[in-house]
Length: 216
Image 1 (cartoon, one colour):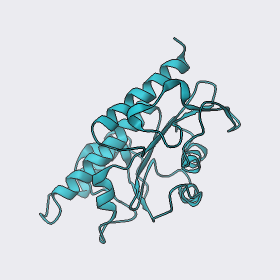
Image 2 (cartoon, rainbow, N blue to C red; image 1 turned 120 degrees about the vertical axis):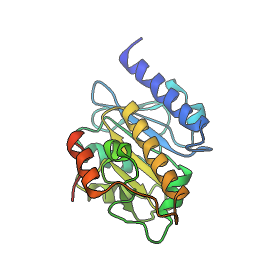
Image 3 (spheres, rainbow, N blue to C red; image 1 turned 90 degrees about the vertical axis):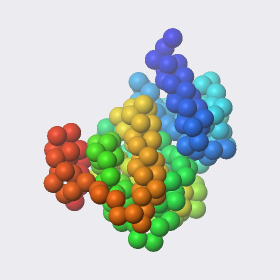
Image 4 (cartoon, one colour; image 1 turned 135 degrees about the vertical axis):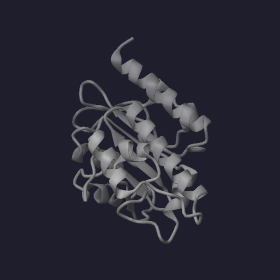
């Protein structure tokens, strides 16, 4: 089996795993990954993560032209913005995960540091997460907002919509976005209970030991 065939299968397996565990439902969410030749494989528009067909994934060449498969997700500007601004990005995942969306609706959430520092793994896999304002789904302005971050964030949260994470490969991107949702769930579960978050010194220890991107 070719490396691209393996990648197609892996995208569909990981997407179904997230769907089966309720991390995104219906026909929500989208996922993309770089191919060995520098092109992209992308989940088609209107498809369910639970039923992606490896042979029908949208296939783009290195110039960003659709050359095979079904029409891509309407959130392509969002994916392209991460690939264009982060040279290390090999995959991008976007979910409509419940707890992270709930947290984005809270009036006192920190826009520049969306996730509270509750566990070391949230820091290690995501760094700081930027909360972006609400955009109508498919609005190219979402991509513009990501470009405005100049590649400094690997993860953003679209208010009232869902998280988006870029990583070195599709497995890393899926692991990171699951960590984002888990941390948001912890934040919601402990909201109003004054949980003990990591201290500034503990945060810096994690950042230094694991070489975490940590702007600001």
